[in-house]
Length: 170
Image (cartoon, rainbow, N blue to C red; front, top):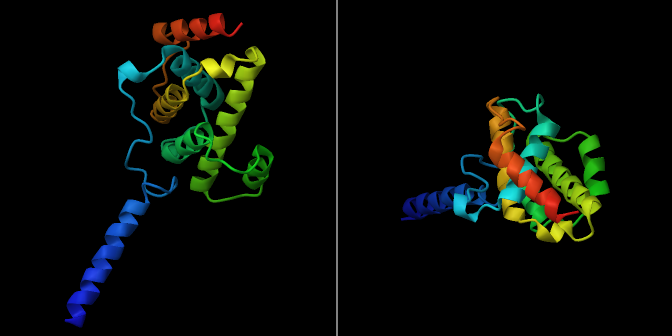
């Protein structure tokens, strides 16, 4: 009886541990961080995020880079889940940390910097951005960079979306 109870307890712990990985950004990278339907994507937000990500990270994202942790950091920033200052995060990045945690914090910093750039265009520009579409654009760009298949800056969808954003944020 005690043996069966122990076995059930071990199985329960294992199943609980496997579900925890979906809540901790840098554990378990099998699932997509975000996967919006095409109808849910705001073209201008997606296009600018995709293009900025490619421009920033082209040539530095290898096949083994933890894109899911990076994008989880982006997502957490845009959802307001980051409770420490960006300066503290930058200091933590500079101090040398595990690569998966580094990818996560790099995503947080990238998202914060991108948000700051929007506020430079106009005071209310950030309010016109769809954060989920931004996250999707960043995630898709990072995955494409990882496979060395990033879309060109001349891509029609990206160009049209970027122009639309510039038009409303002037």
